Image 1: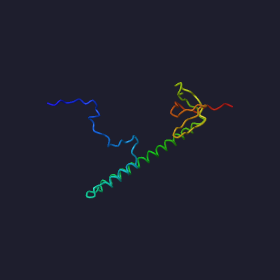
Image 2 (image 1 turned 90 degrees about the horizontal axis):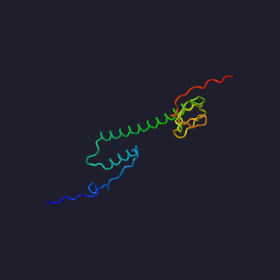
Image 3 (image 1 turned 135 degrees about the vertical axis):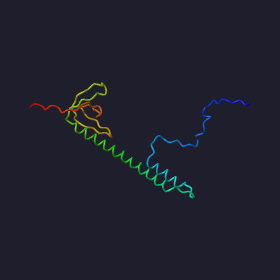
Image 4 (image 1 turned 180 degrees about the vertical axis):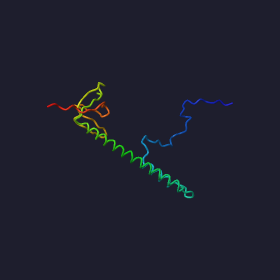
Amino acid sequence: MAELGVTENISDLLPSTSGITQLSSKELGKEDFLNLLVAELQNQNPLEPMDNKDLVLQLSQFSTLEGTQNLNDNMATYINTSNVATAASLIGKDVVYVDAETAKEVVGNVTKVDVTGNVVTLDVDGAKVPMNFLKSIYNPPPVAE
């Protein structure tokens, strides 16, 4: 009876991956989908071409993908515009926010809005405060003359 040897390396038991292309962590987009569709059409068997139903299904999936990406882009633009409008409406109002360093609540007056990329920050008495740090908003009392 032959004796079974013990493999020192687990990689000796696994199939070789030298011919496998690794995908990067980036998401597949519409250009990748089109490249796959074109490759599929170029490499199909001429004696058994792709069924029309399959082609229509793949084209509708592409259309859905493109629509979803456009919707995501439009929603991001809308959210950013909405955040800027909301922040602008706070100018002149008193706010209570949580100080990032001390974790204490601070009261101050919004004097300016800064937009950098998609990040909206408020200038509250000289401090840069992200909008999500706000706890409450109120109108300052009128100044007595």
